[in-house]
Image 1 (tube, helix red, strand yellow):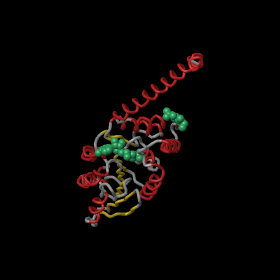
Image 2 (cartoon, helix red, strand yellow; image 1 turned 90 degrees about the horizontal axis):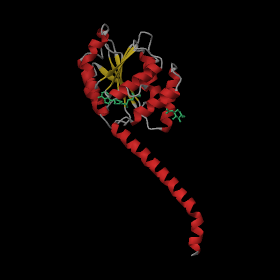
Image 3 (tube, protein in one colour; image 1 turned 45 degrees about the vertical axis):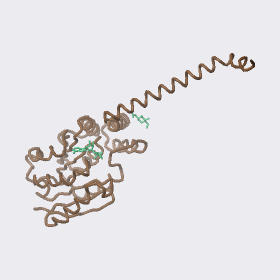
Length: 253
Ligand SMILES: C[S@@+](CC[C@H](N)C(=O)[O-])C[C@H]1O[C@@H](n2cnc3c(N)ncnc32)[C@H](O)[C@@H]1O
Ligand SMILES: *[C@@H]1O[C@H](CO)[C@@H](O)[C@H](O)[C@H]1NC(C)=O
């Protein structure tokens, strides 16, 4: 009896608490559903990376764009190469001083921007991304960094389809091929794509460094590539071997 007497005055509070809890729970479910839907659409990472960088960086300032990417990666999963691999890549670019660069795997544009900021005024980057939404968002970030369409081109296509089309895109400089290639798309395709680039004679017209990003520490297709290179020492060699980066150099020929 006394329990009833106590709980009657408390009833409104109990109802309110359960309602609030219910609201919280439904909000949580709603959020979880949004997550699952975005995951299913496959855009979760690139959309949120793009939104974060686009709205938090200073437009037109390359360093601010890169710093904002790094800030994002401190609190979110990220596919960008990040500052550590980025610095190793910078060192290669500064040594090679390339004028025509090919990148496979644009993603949100982080490595494209890193590359572009070190190219000479006449330098050009062709970057290949097979996912159309990712290619669009990556291109926007490159433009936001202040680069113009006469400095870079985003190809929305798989690497396998893009490579045979590259010679015509390089005109009128096709006779010189690329001076730097960055592969950061799919390690299982590195060897096939390297061989396709060799077939198109895009690597060793006047010397070329091919940089392979190796996040899995030789677990993917990297060992086969190293075997491939060591069997063809007359035309190429392994120049740098770091934990996350392998650089193969194609001699002048
Ligand atoms: C690891 S992310 C690249 C990160 C980027 N280099 C950076 O540091 O900002 C790999 C990207 O390659 C793309 N990709 C995967 N396989 C590809 C292929 N065969 N051809 C072109 N792009 C591919 C994916 O859609 C993804 O956006
Ligand atoms: C911009 O940065 C702030 C602070 O790091 C973050 O809370 C916000 O979500 C970011 N904006 C977007 C659109 O991601």
